[in-house]
Length: 116
Ligand code: HEC
Image 1 (cartoon, protein in one colour):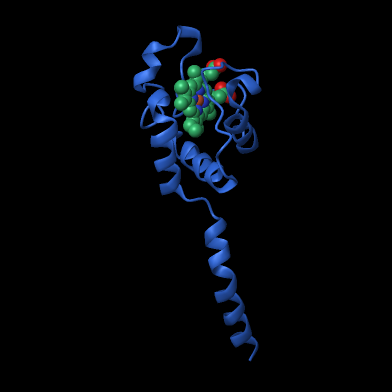
Image 2 (image 1 turned 90 degrees about the vertical axis):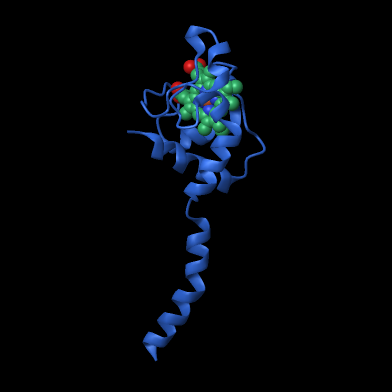
């Protein structure tokens, strides 16, 4: 009886757990739509728009690390919401205020997966 109860509880809870876990594939799609034009498809800092930016304000190579502000997930989320200008970085890093919390989590998971 106890184990049946546990089974029922587990099947009720599992969908919520998997729904809240970051979706790497969705993060990849969002990155392609919103970040790759500057940071490049794989985050190497070599998107088509990178060439138009001054040498001291190039999109970060996200695979190499070396972030100035976004040194952990919480700060990366803050950077995405406020943009570079909001956290003391270049205005060329745009804010993405329309992102929902789960989309930010998905993007962070993808950005973290780019690191070597
Ligand atoms: C219009 C070009 C552009 C777009 C689009 C863009 N970025 Fe950036 N990003 C930059 C530039 C330029 C910098 C470097 C800012 C600086 O060094 O002051 C940067 C820096 C960063 C950094 C490093 C911040 C740090 O602490 O040093 C991260 C992480 C980052 N971007 C993630 C993203 C993500 C994720 C997206 C998509 C949601 C995105 N960027 C979209 C241009 C862009």
